[in-house]
Image (cartoon, rainbow, N blue to C red; front, side, top):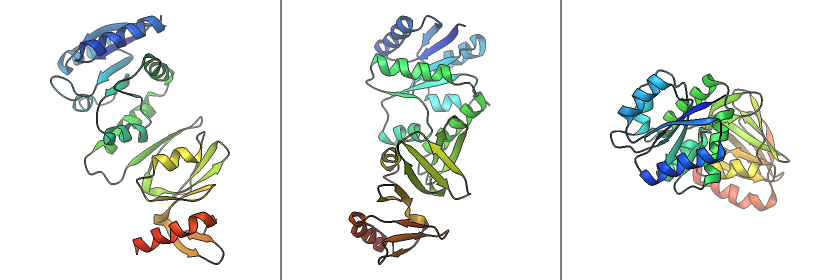
Amino acid sequence: MTHRCLIIEDDAYTAKDVRDTIASHFDNIEVLDIVDNTSTAKIIIETQHPDIVISDINLKDATIFTFLREFNSIAFKIIFITSYSKYAVEAFKFSALDFLEKPFDDETLVLAVQNAMSIIDQENYNKQIQAFFHNFKPNQDRKKLVLKNIEAIHIVDIQDIVYIKSDNNYSEIFINDGRKVVMSKPLKFYETQLQSYTFFRIHQSFLVNVSFAKTFHKKDSVLELSNQLQLPVSSNKTAALVQWLSQQG
């Protein structure tokens, strides 16, 4: 099966590199065209129906986000090329969308294309796109995290994650509505991803959203959460946790 690809990029060097990399690594992908503006891109999308779109964010006539909002639903997979701020990169990561941060190498592009081609459920993919739009809004306090595993795609508010438990190289994510989502990523991944939010690593096995903290029992080194669950606190984390909690008061 041949897949059709549209490249939207106003930097000629980057556009040529993307085209050449696809041609040399994918026999089953046809590059329809390279365009540098959204007006031409829209015509090609509506007439030639590409399966994959690889696009820079800032284009000659608009941003790709403004362009994508014109579609009621997106019938193609999109890989974003960005030299945008850290804030935008965070929004991509929270939404589990593929993006290429300039400068990028051929291997990174190839992997992103392979991931795009492997997506089957377009409805869930559109939910990820909508989650990205939500996360990218200026001054958006309630960020959404897209959790994809072999069973489903879960989109949760970061503030609704109660705690995350390590299970070897897996993480069990406990949501305030009672859901438990198992992800094939180590706890350290989420500790890094959520470090700017109200999450504290209280133990080798637990990352807790301290917004749900109720009582810290110093004698037993146990943190009690608002749902009455009690989690152990490592001795080397106690002082930092006490300091953090006192600052919140």
